[in-house]
Image (cartoon, rainbow, N blue to C red; front, top):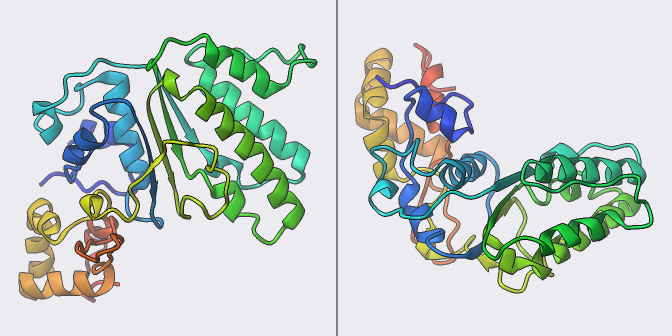
Length: 289
C-alpha cells in the first residue's frame, strides 16, 4: 500500500515518498496552458497549499515529478523562474513598522532567488520602486508567481483597525505593482480563504480570473466521491476489516464527517475535506474520531 500523505503539502515530497496523490493535474493543464492570472478562495483543509506546490514543481522542474499523472500527456511548456510566497508567515507582528520590515524581508528573500536585489542603503528609493524597476527589466512572460494565503495578515488582525489599515495599504501597493507589470508574468496564482473583493487589496488586478465559485472547477480542491473510492480503496478495505464494518458503512461515516461540501454557485459538485486520507491513520477499534 502506498503510504498516506500525512500532513504533507509538498507535491515533490509526496511523489518522492510514493505516497497517495489524488491526481488533480488535469485541472492544472486547464488553468495554465498559456499566460493567465488566477484567484482561488477556499477554506482551510481542502488542499490549497498542495495545489500551489504542484504548480511550483511543474513550472520549476517540468514533468520530473509527474510520471504517470494526467498532465504528462498534455504539458509541452518549458520551465520558468518561480517565486512562491506564503503570507501566513506575516500573521504575527508587534507593530506596523515590524510588519513592513517583515514584508520587505519576505519579498526580498523570495525574489532574490530569481534576480531581485534590494539595496537597503539606497533609502531615497522606496522598496517598491526598486522592485518596480527590477520587474521592468524582465522579459515578457518570463516569471511565475504563486501567492498562498494572500489574506492571512488581514484575517489575523480583523479586530485591530489601525494595524489592519496599515497592512491593507501595503499589500494593495504591492499588488498594484504586480498588476502594472502583468505582461512579465507567465502565470500568477493567488489563494486565500476570503473572496476576491472582501478586503479590496486585490482590486488593482485588472485581469485576475476568479474560479472560486465556477462550476467548471468545483472539484479542483477536495476529494470527490470517486476519488475517495479509487485512490483510498485499500485503506477503505483495511478500515472496514479493523472496525468490523462493511466498506459502504466506512464510506458513509467518512461522508457524514468529512463530505458534502460544495463551493460552486450551482451546487453541482460535492467534495470531501482533503484530510480524509489522514483520517485513515487514526482508525482504531473505537471507530473514527
